[in-house]
Amino acid sequence: ETGVTQTPRHLVMGMTNKKSLKCEQHLGHNAMYWYKQSAKKPLELMFVYSLEERVENNSVPSRFSPECPNSSHLFLHLHTLQPEDSALYLCASSQEGPQMPLQFFGPGTRLTVL
Amino acid sequence: SQQGEEDPQALSIQEGENATMNCSYKTSINNLQWYRQNSGRGLVHLILIRSNEREKHSGRLRVTLDTSKKSSSLLITASRAADTASYFCATAGQFGSSNTGKLIFGQGTTLQVKP
Image 1 (cartoon, helix red, strand yellow):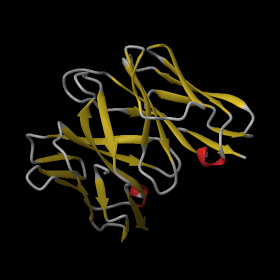
Image 2 (image 1 turned 90 degrees about the horizontal axis):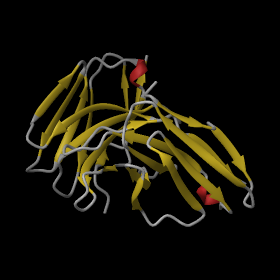
Image 3 (image 1 turned 135 degrees about the horizontal axis):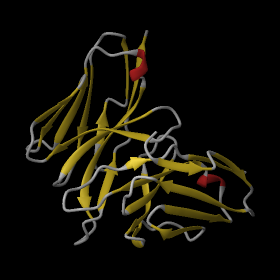
Image 4 (image 1 turned 60 degrees about the vertical axis):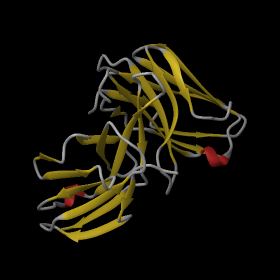
């Protein structure tokens, strides 16, 4: 148990569906991240929020839309996805500061797009 | 190009043996971190070594860092079946002038420890 929870753990959706992934951290951290992990590829950083403001958007397609309503919650809204978007989506949090921090990861949401 | 490239990509050993994984990176770093991932699960942080450190220990783990060669190694001693997992190194940089940490992960080494 890392203090970062993700729901749902598994999600199957069609290409025309709209769904959302949720992440919650109970660690009092001030930064949250979305990563995508596809088979045989390195983890890809998708979005970073620091102090609830988006710091980085790594050229992610607009069919992925993040939302960070407060420092404890992070959402990833999905719409009109493609089969190649099937992957494990990982959320992480950290406490930002002068030293590069550790990131604490949730268990991930396994997404399958049909 | 990708920072944090692990070698080997896959490693299979017997329980009790030592496992060594290597990581190479390309740019200057603040620190280097090793993470573990059990199949289909989230990553768990194992150990962090700062750029001014050369070696660090944590239980059965030993990490070395050679900044002149831009490489690091993770040694797991007296391996156990429960050590079966994927291991990733990640290098830490910054987003421009922001203090927000940016970790860049390699593709990982898949370790299988046979009982």
